[in-house]
Image 1 (cartoon, rainbow, N blue to C red):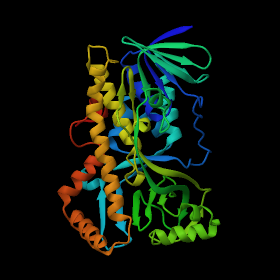
Image 2: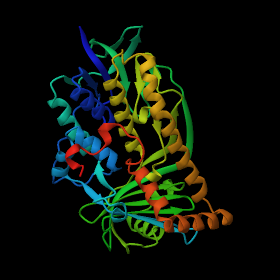
Image 3: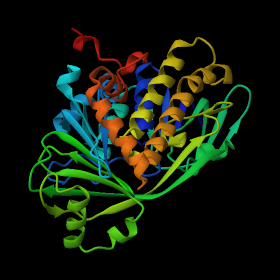
Image 4: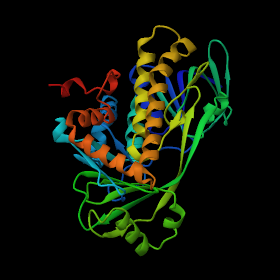
Length: 404
């Protein structure tokens, strides 16, 4: 049986569903394929998940335009109004506040699964969208006019465009024979939920260490979600809870007092990836299928949502065949360079901060202090990180009813 769609998206995570919602709101016929099935429903009695993201203002605006943000507010979000960054190897530090920028907050810490669920509920409520959670993509065949996506249950989907939103091991990227630039950071990211003597106070804390970066992300109940990027992660993961709490407190310079509680820990390898091309005839990549970066600035999912916004705008504005390379190149030009700059910037921060070089220590300490004192420059940096500086697609700008 052959079914016809305008767009077929492989991957029903946050970016895939966001794109599905955006195109569905344009009236496009959209199918999303997700082998993991329906995202779990929200249960307020369930503890915070270990996987959280720091959403910036642009991503919040996107979710608002898609009709998912209000649902997240009804469930569970953790806003933060301040960010404080300091260096273990120098006296340098820098802080950012929402007050300085004239905003209510700098961002929100939200569990991945809640964002995915809110987008799923919105996607499945639209008239022209279909969720395919009972089969997987098997292969893609492309010709001049369309693409055929074969599923494991024998169905064939005919479409003008196939989108790879299927993560760092993207099946769509492999089917299109698109190569990767790959860089192993020789670190793992340790994640856990912790409680300290003092609450995180609506502040996102980050400390640069000689072997990695430690971030404390504030949760609404006073605890914090930690992301500890370290070269000695295996050693830290092997510690009993009592010793891990002590090591964590020391790495954080006991900035919030002793660590009182720690949840079970998990880890993931840190590897930078960047697709050599984002496009192929009738195929396009977004999110982690196209790029993964070091989490030290928390920009991964925000870059993915900006991909969604850019591709949505390109498709919405063209009167031509949006699966053609000439149209898809507009999307690639708008996103690949910016994503590459962010990836190199994060790698530059790694080189500058994550080492014991005494000369670099003095340079970075001075740099942090000078930047902290240069308020206009500092605020412009933060506005860029929040996704509110420069030209942006309409869907990531504030909704009209929020403009004063």
